[in-house]
Length: 226
Image (tube, rainbow, N blue to C red; front, side, top):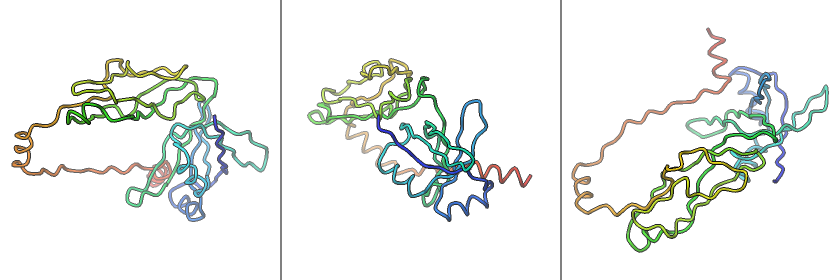
């Protein structure tokens, strides 16, 4: 397992107005959560965090968080990213939540499913590959988390499907989804008359409602106003 190290600093700046100044100085405000302990406000380098995002799939990667402390030397803390908050328009990272974990205790985590190959039902029969489950939930030690789960779909014909029970997982990794749940399947091509009926009906624009997720600092700011 490759060791990923990310430096962090304790932060005293709390609240919406103060964390903006942190971002202006090139940092991302963050919080470290640990079971049975109080959450710890920290900040990480924006440049360094973006570099890691481009280099790794951070959602399922163990990060050794080294927190600077003037009073005492801190040991690296093994963490997984709990959530990343993005600015809804520009997509800038506003805040990161880290979850401290034990390397000797199993955890539950979602792992992406990746289809490999081109199905016979698509290449020769004109069908379409349908990806039903993009992630599956597994339980394993943090050191055994797969980056992704590859599924060979080459031999699938129209009407064939791959279920959760058909997937081969690495040793020490247990799947938690229903065994009969369909992960991938090959559907028959849409008949021309069906396509014509849809075209005559005309496009319908669904109502899109975007919900902005508040960062911990924004929530705190609202509570302070009350």
